[in-house]
Image (cartoon, rainbow, N blue to C red; front, side, top):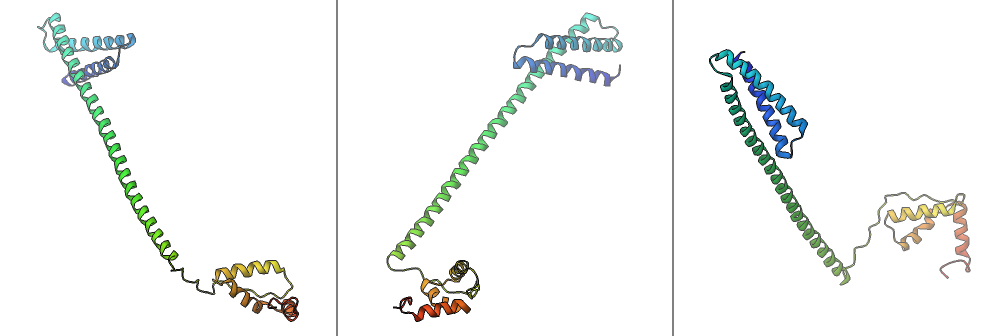
Length: 209
């Protein structure tokens, strides 16, 4: 047996003890788990004893068994410490994670409070502007523009559709109601213009009278 074989056997023994202690620290060890651990220990211990007898033929079997038992006890204690250390690390990670989440929540609450302050300031500004309007500072009149072209109407189409198109275009161009009435006749042609002129000539239908 080579030194590398000894190293592999020790690694196997450490793995057995670590697995066994992991089960034991989490709760009662099941019979099948106990049996598997004992079987692995006996197999590894036997191979180690055979290897030691090859290098140290003068050592008696009881003495070798005693040394291996002491070695296994030491490894078992080391595994317990290692498991407890890893458990402590896991607890620290959990605590750090909770602290980080708590800090994030506090930061979010602080940002929300700042946003609320900004929103309140904006609301106060809007109220102040509304108060100025109420004190006699009306909004400036809408400036007329020519964004949408107003189509003419010759009386052959649907007058309701044309009126809706005229209204939409006039609103888009910023025309007031008085301005709409003033310019509407300019977009009438053909029979529609003749109908309007006839109604204007008739005293009974002319809105001026």
